[in-house]
Image (cartoon, rainbow, N blue to C red; front, side, top):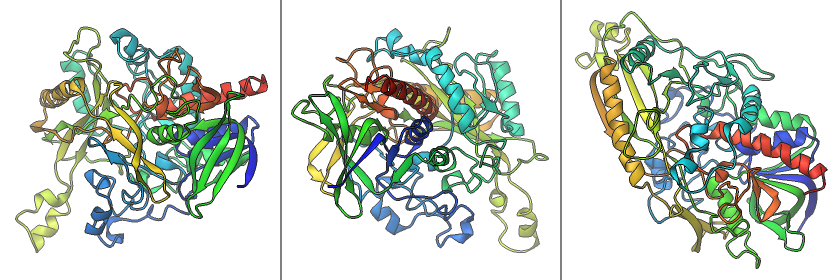
Length: 559
């Protein structure tokens, strides 16, 4: 086995891994970034970025062959001709579902930073204090004031467009100018503010799509093709942002096709010494050594690596001494909402294809608003004008048809809820000792589901959406509630939670594994609770903070 030495190893190249690589290299460390999948180069490898529906053999839709090979992906939107090959095939990387769990993965350089929804929100102390106040799981060992400067730091580099709305539940940030609401959204927002006397707000989404140029990146072109890769670098991804910064230092070595099978641990030194990898193309094994390791393989894969790193010291895996490794799986539950049509506005239209929508921040269990469950939810949605198709039911040919397709359809307004999932020890993952993948590695077995608190919340997510749209003047409002399953939000969190006590948590307030302080976990694994906002911005902030601490401790000789 070949051996090579680095100052730091970063496992994973997605949102948090890219940030770890950038921060560590800029601080002078020689860094190896390992990615289990193929390389994707910025611009050059965005093969579908400039295609339209008619450029695909099947107009961008999924085929029967795709469905046969991707039965998990077929459960939701990721399976389609446009992004085919970006999401992992179920048949190539299976997992065991004790209960239904939709696990959508991106195994390539950049990970899901190329595929994410880009909504970027700060947490408030309402979120950091929630576990302590509710007596749920364990308390976060940090509060907003500690993380605030790191939110500032990552927002300035990543580029977040949004409005400073002055909402205590959703702290303002370092924003570029916001995208504009449509005329319908503006009116609905005004009506909701008036009806609910300022207790509910509808704002433009805060998104990692830039509206002003940054170094090497152009402002958003309003193409709304983000998940095909952006040739303009107009949204934050590893490829557009953190990887170029890391490469610029000359301190980064990127190694794709590298499946990390275990973190190596020296029980005498009580430190990790490096990692063992399996080359995904050659099946050869290699060892790489480092002083510090950042684990950013995504929540469930990070848990897998830690569990597969079991030794005679910890049979349950590295970081398992508390009994919490692999437990407390969270996500955001969604698929609940409502929509309807808006009358009027026929003389108005939209500008471009806005890669953003509206957001209604959480208002439940705040102040005088009390519900029969803990925590709450927010809504994402939009008010848009439809296509011409709705107008041509009676026309098939001729002048009437030509005239009809020259006019757009009517306006509609819709919203979908994103609800918080409580941490629960009974929602967990383990290694399946009976099933192996094509590399001969045991797969993950996931046993997790929504509990009573989430199911109660979903009733209000539906009822409130119908109520608000109706009160805002939307006509023919119809609600929906489908697929109440974990994983569908693609916001998996937990498995290596942060805490103040090594007996009840996997990592400390600096994201260090209690059992191996030179190993830092800064992807979704460390999340102690889930809040109800998209989590990626929080991963960025904690990663930058942990990297700063790690280098400081390294210089002091503590690692």
